[in-house]
Image 1 (cartoon, rainbow, N blue to C red):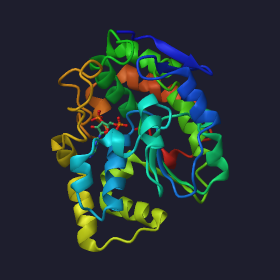
Image 2: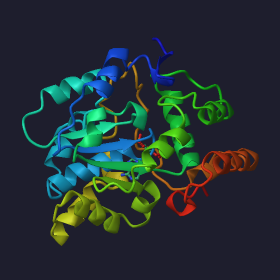
Image 3: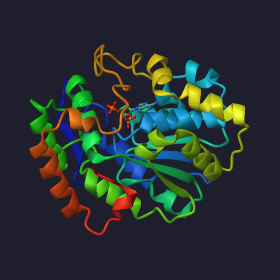
Length: 286
Ligand code: A3P
């Protein structure tokens, strides 16, 4: 099993899942349509939770779709081989798409389109811990020998999709656009109902109170953990051995259970340097 990276424009991608032509085609040729809805995140920021919520909003809370179609087929990844095949097979009408691409590699056509894009950000220390547990169990990229090693890779941007800092700074530059909504994992956790209402407003969808209740109920951590279409239990076992779950803890601040005080303090210092000038209220790192 090759666990090395494929480097494209200075960004590492797991060679097991990506091809140079696929990333290049996504960037240069992929045609975004005005009616598309796109979820974009740095990996481990709550991508799948957002997808589940969007699927439910689009179906007024009815869980039939999320319980019958794997999550990666519902919101295929633009830059992945199988994702782009799935997108090609999609029927006419609004498409639901996902991407982890940094802004400089995102489909160029998006920037002149009216497609609606939701970017989810998350406390990078939780992203780091989440990624460490996920990638050290899966077989899609180099295994870190320890959390300390993964911590160093993360800070250097030597992990899939590159530097968290660059990814977030790049995408946050789009936050004033009418067709871009930036949300944090933390806000979604703290007040899921209000945040889902914000998403509905952004998408121009109106839900009745009981439909909103169904969205919340069916996208809860427990519901996703039990949904085999969403919890990764149907994933290819050669990449994701049994036990690798997308729904691990689903908490805000789990980093406190894993990083040492010294690691957290050193991280905060780097965060302040790299994110200098970035409004702290938009992304707390506590
Ligand atoms: P943890 O590893 O900290 O638990 P992504 O989808 O971008 O890979 O992000 C995965 C993270 O989102 C995991 O974080 C996972 O537990 C969390 N997550 C997934 N579904 C969730 C839900 N319904 N509610 C809260 N967190 C969820």
